[in-house]
Length: 277
Image (cartoon, rainbow, N blue to C red):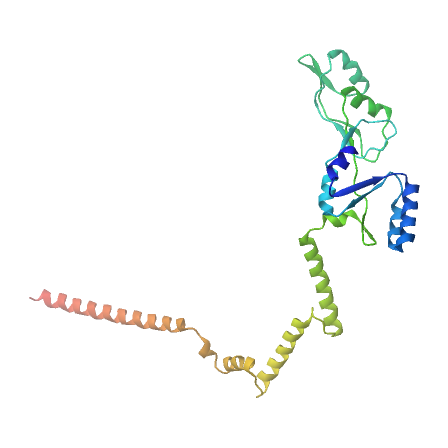
């Protein structure tokens, strides 16, 4: 706790004490300041909890709080916060300790004068109570698989208590949620034909389509419909200049074929006349 207070010094203040005293302090403060919203903190004062008062960024406070963890040994009767698995490897114990591992049905072998665990051993699963047999091996190896520290349980801001999961939201998550809500508003507005800012672009486009259809079907026109009506009257006006190229190239091919025929005829005449020279 001293290290945590030292790490937060200057930006935040940590207050921990008896829950009854903290509840009384909150009630007195609410009466003196006429701020009943702060009473929302009273139901949260259950168990081993405390307060962190800060003016800084909440994400930074939570990250700083996560840096301070203390290793703790396995004890009988505790509820395991995580899965406890002893990995295979050298234990550093001398061969005389082999009988200890045999009692626990843990496969071992002697390697370079020390006992080595051959296979990973799963001692206890998360949320299960720790028994005496699960305590023996970590105690023998001097392993502290559990770690304890402070974690954020709730966030209080201007009378509102929110879940700490809110701190995990990024700007992309907020934009995605906002876009979804905006789509729902647009769908509802279109369904009940109620104009809103979310549905205004769709309504304008729909109105333009109706006006354009009316202009095409009748003699009525307006500037945005003239080009469409002109295209419907004569689509050839909007054909690109590349369309004439195939015809030109075809004519050029015909000319080349005719020239080739003339040349062949001339060459044949020359050949015939040359035979009688």
